[in-house]
Image (cartoon, rainbow, N blue to C red; front, side, top):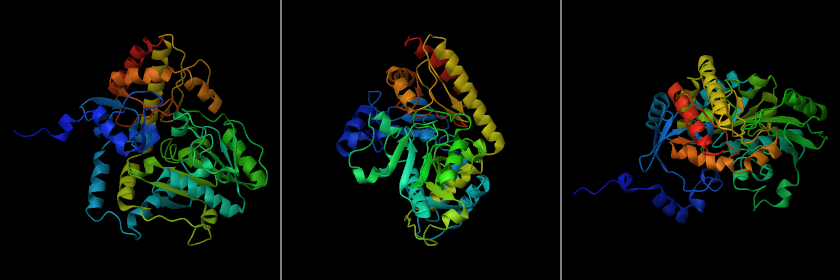
Length: 427
Protein backbone atom coordinates (compact mmCIF):
# COMPACT_ATOMS: atom_id res chain seq x y z
CA UNK A 1 0.00 0.00 0.00
CA UNK A 2 1.39 3.38 -1.01
CA UNK A 3 1.70 5.70 1.98
CA UNK A 4 -0.21 8.97 1.71
CA UNK A 5 1.71 12.02 0.57
CA UNK A 6 2.69 14.61 3.20
CA UNK A 7 0.20 17.00 1.61
CA UNK A 8 -2.66 14.53 2.06
CA UNK A 9 -2.05 14.15 5.79
CA UNK A 10 -1.04 17.69 6.66
CA UNK A 11 -3.28 20.05 8.57
CA UNK A 12 -2.90 23.70 9.43
CA UNK A 13 -3.05 22.87 13.13
CA UNK A 14 -0.36 20.19 12.85
CA UNK A 15 1.98 22.38 10.85
CA UNK A 16 1.44 25.29 13.19
CA UNK A 17 2.27 23.08 16.15
CA UNK A 18 5.49 22.02 14.45
CA UNK A 19 6.27 25.59 13.43
CA UNK A 20 5.95 26.97 16.95
CA UNK A 21 8.75 24.62 18.05
CA UNK A 22 11.26 25.96 15.53
CA UNK A 23 9.99 29.40 14.49
CA UNK A 24 9.18 32.21 16.97
CA UNK A 25 5.40 32.37 17.05
CA UNK A 26 5.33 29.78 14.29
CA UNK A 27 6.03 32.38 11.58
CA UNK A 28 8.89 34.10 9.80
CA UNK A 29 7.26 37.53 9.90
CA UNK A 30 4.87 38.84 12.57
CA UNK A 31 2.35 40.03 9.97
CA UNK A 32 1.63 36.37 9.15
CA UNK A 33 0.68 35.53 12.71
CA UNK A 34 -2.96 35.54 13.74
CA UNK A 35 -2.19 37.29 17.03
CA UNK A 36 -4.51 40.25 16.45
CA UNK A 37 -7.37 38.19 14.99
CA UNK A 38 -6.98 34.91 16.87
CA UNK A 39 -6.95 31.39 15.52
CA UNK A 40 -4.47 29.33 13.53
CA UNK A 41 -2.76 30.57 10.36
CA UNK A 42 -3.48 28.67 7.16
CA UNK A 43 -0.34 27.25 5.52
CA UNK A 44 -0.25 27.83 1.77
CA UNK A 45 0.52 24.80 -0.37
CA UNK A 46 0.21 26.46 -3.77
CA UNK A 47 -1.22 29.51 -5.50
CA UNK A 48 -2.42 30.54 -8.92
CA UNK A 49 -3.81 33.84 -10.08
CA UNK A 50 -6.20 35.27 -7.50
CA UNK A 51 -6.31 32.11 -5.36
CA UNK A 52 -4.26 30.23 -2.80
CA UNK A 53 -4.77 26.67 -1.53
CA UNK A 54 -3.78 25.64 1.96
CA UNK A 55 -2.31 22.28 2.97
CA UNK A 56 -5.79 20.95 3.72
CA UNK A 57 -6.95 21.70 0.19
CA UNK A 58 -9.07 24.74 1.08
CA UNK A 59 -9.14 27.38 -1.64
CA UNK A 60 -9.16 31.08 -0.77
CA UNK A 61 -9.77 34.12 -2.92
CA UNK A 62 -6.62 35.98 -1.92
CA UNK A 63 -6.34 39.72 -1.29
CA UNK A 64 -3.04 39.47 0.58
CA UNK A 65 -1.09 38.77 -2.62
CA UNK A 66 2.17 38.75 -0.65
CA UNK A 67 1.26 42.16 0.78
CA UNK A 68 1.17 43.74 -2.66
CA UNK A 69 4.13 42.07 -4.35
CA UNK A 70 2.01 39.88 -6.63
CA UNK A 71 0.37 42.61 -8.69
CA UNK A 72 -0.21 40.23 -11.61
CA UNK A 73 -1.54 37.49 -9.36
CA UNK A 74 0.24 34.35 -8.19
CA UNK A 75 2.43 32.20 -10.44
CA UNK A 76 2.14 34.47 -13.47
CA UNK A 77 3.29 32.32 -16.43
CA UNK A 78 5.71 34.89 -17.86
CA UNK A 79 7.29 35.55 -14.47
CA UNK A 80 7.61 31.82 -13.73
CA UNK A 81 9.20 31.24 -17.14
CA UNK A 82 11.68 34.07 -16.58
CA UNK A 83 12.68 32.64 -13.19
CA UNK A 84 13.16 29.15 -14.64
CA UNK A 85 15.25 30.48 -17.49
CA UNK A 86 17.42 32.56 -15.16
CA UNK A 87 17.84 29.71 -12.67
CA UNK A 88 19.11 27.47 -15.44
CA UNK A 89 21.99 29.87 -15.98
CA UNK A 90 22.91 30.10 -12.26
CA UNK A 91 21.32 31.54 -9.16
CA UNK A 92 23.93 33.96 -7.82
CA UNK A 93 27.38 35.07 -8.94
CA UNK A 94 28.78 37.85 -6.78
CA UNK A 95 29.40 39.71 -10.03
CA UNK A 96 27.36 42.17 -12.12
CA UNK A 97 24.73 40.88 -14.56
CA UNK A 98 22.89 42.34 -17.52
CA UNK A 99 19.47 41.93 -15.90
CA UNK A 100 20.30 44.18 -12.96
CA UNK A 101 21.34 46.92 -15.39
CA UNK A 102 18.11 46.45 -17.34
CA UNK A 103 15.99 46.58 -14.20
CA UNK A 104 17.76 49.76 -13.07
CA UNK A 105 17.13 51.28 -16.50
CA UNK A 106 13.45 50.30 -16.30
CA UNK A 107 13.02 51.95 -12.90
CA UNK A 108 14.86 55.15 -13.76
CA UNK A 109 13.04 55.54 -17.06
CA UNK A 110 9.66 55.19 -15.34
CA UNK A 111 10.00 57.37 -12.24
CA UNK A 112 10.43 61.14 -12.77
CA UNK A 113 13.60 62.43 -11.10
CA UNK A 114 15.03 59.00 -10.30
CA UNK A 115 18.43 58.80 -12.01
CA UNK A 116 20.35 56.04 -10.22
CA UNK A 117 19.48 53.12 -7.96
CA UNK A 118 21.26 50.61 -5.77
CA UNK A 119 19.58 47.24 -5.37
CA UNK A 120 19.11 45.39 -2.08
CA UNK A 121 17.44 42.16 -1.03
CA UNK A 122 14.49 43.66 0.89
CA UNK A 123 12.48 46.80 1.45
CA UNK A 124 13.89 47.09 4.96
CA UNK A 125 17.43 47.16 3.56
CA UNK A 126 16.39 49.76 1.01
CA UNK A 127 14.86 52.08 3.62
CA UNK A 128 17.76 51.60 6.04
CA UNK A 129 20.22 52.46 3.29
CA UNK A 130 18.18 55.45 2.14
CA UNK A 131 18.34 56.91 5.66
CA UNK A 132 22.10 56.33 5.84
CA UNK A 133 22.48 57.95 2.42
CA UNK A 134 20.48 61.00 3.53
CA UNK A 135 22.56 61.38 6.67
CA UNK A 136 25.78 61.03 4.71
CA UNK A 137 24.72 63.45 2.01
CA UNK A 138 23.62 66.16 4.45
CA UNK A 139 26.08 65.61 7.28
CA UNK A 140 23.13 65.67 9.69
CA UNK A 141 21.74 63.04 12.04
CA UNK A 142 18.07 63.73 12.79
CA UNK A 143 15.30 61.70 11.11
CA UNK A 144 11.65 62.76 11.12
CA UNK A 145 8.99 60.12 10.41
CA UNK A 146 5.22 59.87 10.66
CA UNK A 147 3.33 57.81 13.21
CA UNK A 148 1.80 54.75 11.57
CA UNK A 149 4.19 54.73 8.61
CA UNK A 150 6.29 51.56 8.47
CA UNK A 151 9.73 51.70 6.89
CA UNK A 152 11.01 48.23 7.71
CA UNK A 153 12.48 46.93 10.93
CA UNK A 154 15.67 48.95 11.11
CA UNK A 155 16.21 50.31 14.64
CA UNK A 156 15.88 54.02 13.95
CA UNK A 157 12.56 53.68 12.09
CA UNK A 158 10.57 51.29 14.29
CA UNK A 159 9.20 54.01 16.55
CA UNK A 160 5.40 54.22 16.15
CA UNK A 161 5.52 51.99 13.10
CA UNK A 162 2.44 50.53 11.48
CA UNK A 163 1.92 47.09 9.91
CA UNK A 164 3.26 44.21 12.01
CA UNK A 165 4.41 46.53 14.80
CA UNK A 166 0.88 47.84 15.24
CA UNK A 167 -0.73 44.42 14.76
CA UNK A 168 1.32 43.07 17.68
CA UNK A 169 0.20 45.97 19.88
CA UNK A 170 3.72 47.41 20.09
CA UNK A 171 4.93 51.02 19.97
CA UNK A 172 8.45 50.04 18.94
CA UNK A 173 10.67 47.07 19.71
CA UNK A 174 12.67 45.65 22.57
CA UNK A 175 16.33 45.44 21.70
CA UNK A 176 16.41 48.94 20.23
CA UNK A 177 18.70 50.98 22.49
CA UNK A 178 17.75 54.58 23.29
CA UNK A 179 20.74 55.81 21.32
CA UNK A 180 19.34 54.24 18.13
CA UNK A 181 16.21 56.39 18.25
CA UNK A 182 17.67 59.44 19.95
CA UNK A 183 17.70 61.26 16.61
CA UNK A 184 14.28 60.00 15.46
CA UNK A 185 11.31 62.35 15.76
CA UNK A 186 7.77 61.02 15.24
CA UNK A 187 5.02 63.37 14.06
CA UNK A 188 1.35 62.86 13.07
CA UNK A 189 0.53 61.99 9.45
CA UNK A 190 -1.25 64.65 7.39
CA UNK A 191 0.22 67.41 9.56
CA UNK A 192 3.21 69.27 8.11
CA UNK A 193 6.00 69.37 10.72
CA UNK A 194 8.18 72.39 11.37
CA UNK A 195 11.73 71.21 10.68
CA UNK A 196 15.01 72.61 11.93
CA UNK A 197 18.43 72.60 10.34
CA UNK A 198 19.49 69.46 12.24
CA UNK A 199 17.12 67.29 10.17
CA UNK A 200 18.78 65.08 7.60
CA UNK A 201 15.66 63.48 6.17
CA UNK A 202 11.88 63.52 6.39
CA UNK A 203 10.60 59.99 5.71
CA UNK A 204 7.06 59.29 4.55
CA UNK A 205 4.92 56.71 2.86
CA UNK A 206 3.39 59.02 0.23
CA UNK A 207 0.18 57.02 0.56
CA UNK A 208 0.17 55.46 4.01
CA UNK A 209 -0.56 51.76 3.57
CA UNK A 210 0.68 50.29 6.84
CA UNK A 211 -1.98 51.77 9.14
CA UNK A 212 -4.77 50.56 6.93
CA UNK A 213 -4.91 52.89 3.93
CA UNK A 214 -4.71 56.63 4.57
CA UNK A 215 -4.53 59.06 1.68
CA UNK A 216 -2.44 62.23 2.00
CA UNK A 217 -4.63 65.29 2.19
CA UNK A 218 -4.50 67.73 -0.73
CA UNK A 219 -1.26 69.71 -0.68
CA UNK A 220 0.33 67.63 2.10
CA UNK A 221 3.13 66.07 0.04
CA UNK A 222 3.97 69.36 -1.68
CA UNK A 223 4.10 71.07 1.72
CA UNK A 224 6.57 68.41 2.89
CA UNK A 225 8.68 69.11 -0.18
CA UNK A 226 8.62 72.85 0.56
CA UNK A 227 9.50 72.37 4.24
CA UNK A 228 12.46 70.15 3.38
CA UNK A 229 13.69 72.71 0.87
CA UNK A 230 13.40 75.45 3.49
CA UNK A 231 15.90 73.79 5.84
CA UNK A 232 17.99 71.78 3.38
CA UNK A 233 16.70 68.38 4.50
CA UNK A 234 16.09 65.51 2.09
CA UNK A 235 12.59 64.19 1.42
CA UNK A 236 12.38 60.38 1.39
CA UNK A 237 9.47 58.59 -0.29
CA UNK A 238 9.14 55.01 0.93
CA UNK A 239 7.52 53.43 -2.11
CA UNK A 240 7.94 49.81 -1.15
CA UNK A 241 4.14 49.53 -1.48
CA UNK A 242 3.18 52.43 -3.75
CA UNK A 243 6.05 52.01 -6.22
CA UNK A 244 4.78 50.53 -9.50
CA UNK A 245 1.38 49.96 -7.89
CA UNK A 246 -0.10 53.44 -8.20
CA UNK A 247 1.28 53.49 -11.75
CA UNK A 248 4.59 53.16 -13.56
CA UNK A 249 5.78 56.45 -12.11
CA UNK A 250 4.67 55.55 -8.60
CA UNK A 251 3.72 58.25 -6.12
CA UNK A 252 5.89 60.83 -7.86
CA UNK A 253 3.86 60.69 -11.06
CA UNK A 254 0.64 60.30 -9.07
CA UNK A 255 1.24 63.33 -6.84
CA UNK A 256 3.51 65.53 -8.95
CA UNK A 257 5.92 65.77 -6.00
CA UNK A 258 9.51 64.61 -6.44
CA UNK A 259 11.47 63.48 -3.37
CA UNK A 260 15.25 63.36 -3.03
CA UNK A 261 15.44 59.68 -2.14
CA UNK A 262 13.21 56.70 -2.89
CA UNK A 263 12.90 53.14 -1.63
CA UNK A 264 11.24 50.38 -3.66
CA UNK A 265 10.40 46.71 -3.17
CA UNK A 266 7.60 44.19 -3.66
CA UNK A 267 6.33 44.74 -7.26
CA UNK A 268 9.79 45.37 -8.72
CA UNK A 269 10.88 41.82 -7.82
CA UNK A 270 7.97 39.96 -9.39
CA UNK A 271 7.39 38.08 -6.12
CA UNK A 272 11.02 37.37 -5.24
CA UNK A 273 13.00 39.05 -2.41
CA UNK A 274 14.13 42.45 -3.64
CA UNK A 275 14.55 46.09 -2.72
CA UNK A 276 16.12 49.20 -4.20
CA UNK A 277 16.86 52.75 -3.14
CA UNK A 278 17.77 55.63 -5.36
CA UNK A 279 17.81 59.30 -6.12
CA UNK A 280 19.38 61.87 -8.36
CA UNK A 281 22.87 61.32 -9.75
CA UNK A 282 24.16 63.96 -7.34
CA UNK A 283 22.65 62.33 -4.24
CA UNK A 284 23.64 58.81 -5.28
CA UNK A 285 27.24 59.89 -5.87
CA UNK A 286 27.60 59.65 -2.09
CA UNK A 287 27.24 55.84 -2.24
CA UNK A 288 30.38 53.67 -2.30
CA UNK A 289 32.34 53.11 -4.47
CA UNK A 290 31.65 56.66 -5.70
CA UNK A 291 31.40 58.24 -2.26
CA UNK A 292 31.87 57.70 1.48
CA UNK A 293 28.47 56.15 2.37
CA UNK A 294 28.95 52.39 2.51
CA UNK A 295 26.26 49.94 1.45
CA UNK A 296 26.61 46.45 0.05
CA UNK A 297 24.99 43.04 -0.22
CA UNK A 298 26.10 39.64 -1.52
CA UNK A 299 22.71 38.88 -3.10
CA UNK A 300 21.84 42.44 -4.17
CA UNK A 301 20.69 42.48 -7.78
CA UNK A 302 20.12 38.72 -7.66
CA UNK A 303 19.65 37.37 -11.22
CA UNK A 304 16.44 35.48 -10.37
CA UNK A 305 14.86 38.51 -8.71
CA UNK A 306 15.86 40.89 -11.49
CA UNK A 307 14.57 38.48 -14.15
CA UNK A 308 11.25 38.16 -12.31
CA UNK A 309 11.03 41.93 -11.85
CA UNK A 310 11.63 42.62 -15.52
CA UNK A 311 9.02 40.03 -16.52
CA UNK A 312 6.47 41.60 -14.17
CA UNK A 313 7.14 45.24 -15.00
CA UNK A 314 7.12 44.47 -18.72
CA UNK A 315 3.43 43.59 -18.47
CA UNK A 316 2.38 46.68 -16.53
CA UNK A 317 1.21 49.00 -19.28
CA UNK A 318 -0.94 52.08 -18.73
CA UNK A 319 -3.96 50.06 -19.86
CA UNK A 320 -3.26 47.39 -17.23
CA UNK A 321 -3.00 50.05 -14.52
CA UNK A 322 -6.34 51.51 -15.58
CA UNK A 323 -7.81 48.01 -15.45
CA UNK A 324 -6.41 47.40 -11.98
CA UNK A 325 -7.58 50.77 -10.65
CA UNK A 326 -11.06 50.03 -11.98
CA UNK A 327 -11.06 46.72 -10.10
CA UNK A 328 -10.05 48.51 -6.89
CA UNK A 329 -12.76 51.14 -7.35
CA UNK A 330 -15.46 48.53 -7.90
CA UNK A 331 -14.29 46.52 -4.91
CA UNK A 332 -14.20 49.55 -2.60
CA UNK A 333 -17.56 50.86 -3.75
CA UNK A 334 -19.21 47.45 -3.56
CA UNK A 335 -17.84 46.61 -0.12
CA UNK A 336 -18.89 50.00 1.22
CA UNK A 337 -22.45 49.50 0.01
CA UNK A 338 -22.58 45.88 1.18
CA UNK A 339 -21.28 46.50 4.71
CA UNK A 340 -22.96 49.85 5.33
CA UNK A 341 -26.17 48.39 3.94
CA UNK A 342 -26.12 45.90 6.79
CA UNK A 343 -26.00 48.75 9.28
CA UNK A 344 -22.28 48.45 10.09
CA UNK A 345 -20.36 51.76 10.01
CA UNK A 346 -17.43 51.37 7.63
CA UNK A 347 -14.87 53.30 5.60
CA UNK A 348 -13.36 51.60 2.53
CA UNK A 349 -10.77 54.03 1.14
CA UNK A 350 -9.26 53.47 -2.28
CA UNK A 351 -6.21 55.06 -3.86
CA UNK A 352 -5.20 53.73 -7.26
CA UNK A 353 -5.07 49.94 -6.95
CA UNK A 354 -4.88 50.08 -3.14
CA UNK A 355 -7.92 49.47 -0.93
CA UNK A 356 -8.33 49.69 2.85
CA UNK A 357 -11.04 49.02 5.40
CA UNK A 358 -11.84 50.72 8.71
CA UNK A 359 -14.85 49.85 10.83
CA UNK A 360 -16.18 53.17 12.08
CA UNK A 361 -18.24 56.13 10.98
CA UNK A 362 -15.42 58.68 10.94
CA UNK A 363 -12.91 59.13 8.13
CA UNK A 364 -9.36 58.09 9.07
CA UNK A 365 -6.63 60.67 8.44
CA UNK A 366 -3.83 59.61 10.80
CA UNK A 367 -2.53 56.84 13.06
CA UNK A 368 -4.64 57.87 16.06
CA UNK A 369 -7.77 57.56 13.93
CA UNK A 370 -6.59 54.18 12.58
CA UNK A 371 -5.94 52.88 16.08
CA UNK A 372 -9.40 53.95 17.20
CA UNK A 373 -10.97 52.08 14.29
CA UNK A 374 -8.84 48.99 14.89
CA UNK A 375 -9.52 49.02 18.61
CA UNK A 376 -13.22 48.24 18.36
CA UNK A 377 -12.52 44.59 17.52
CA UNK A 378 -14.87 44.40 14.53
CA UNK A 379 -12.11 43.61 12.05
CA UNK A 380 -11.32 40.37 13.89
CA UNK A 381 -14.88 39.12 13.43
CA UNK A 382 -15.02 40.35 9.84
CA UNK A 383 -11.71 38.67 8.97
CA UNK A 384 -12.79 35.27 10.24
CA UNK A 385 -16.22 35.57 8.68
CA UNK A 386 -14.65 36.22 5.29
CA UNK A 387 -11.99 33.52 5.72
CA UNK A 388 -14.58 30.92 6.74
CA UNK A 389 -16.36 31.70 3.48
CA UNK A 390 -13.23 31.45 1.34
CA UNK A 391 -12.03 35.06 1.08
CA UNK A 392 -8.62 35.86 2.58
CA UNK A 393 -7.68 39.32 3.79
CA UNK A 394 -4.57 40.09 5.86
CA UNK A 395 -4.77 38.88 9.49
CA UNK A 396 -4.55 42.34 10.98
CA UNK A 397 -6.52 45.60 10.82
CA UNK A 398 -3.54 47.76 9.80
CA UNK A 399 -2.90 46.16 6.41
CA UNK A 400 -4.11 47.18 2.97
CA UNK A 401 -6.22 45.07 0.61
CA UNK A 402 -4.46 44.19 -2.66
CA UNK A 403 -6.59 43.28 -5.67
CA UNK A 404 -4.45 41.90 -8.50
CA UNK A 405 -4.82 41.82 -12.23
CA UNK A 406 -5.90 38.18 -11.88
CA UNK A 407 -9.02 39.07 -9.89
CA UNK A 408 -11.97 38.72 -12.24
CA UNK A 409 -15.32 40.48 -12.21
CA UNK A 410 -16.78 37.29 -10.75
CA UNK A 411 -14.15 37.34 -7.98
CA UNK A 412 -15.02 40.92 -7.09
CA UNK A 413 -18.72 40.14 -7.06
CA UNK A 414 -18.11 37.10 -4.85
CA UNK A 415 -16.11 39.26 -2.43
CA UNK A 416 -18.82 41.92 -2.25
CA UNK A 417 -21.58 39.35 -1.74
CA UNK A 418 -19.53 37.62 0.95
CA UNK A 419 -18.88 40.95 2.69
CA UNK A 420 -22.62 41.60 2.79
CA UNK A 421 -23.25 38.16 4.26
CA UNK A 422 -20.57 38.62 6.92
CA UNK A 423 -21.66 42.17 7.71
CA UNK A 424 -25.14 40.88 8.51
CA UNK A 425 -23.57 38.89 11.36
CA UNK A 426 -21.74 41.94 12.75
CA UNK A 427 -24.61 44.34 13.34
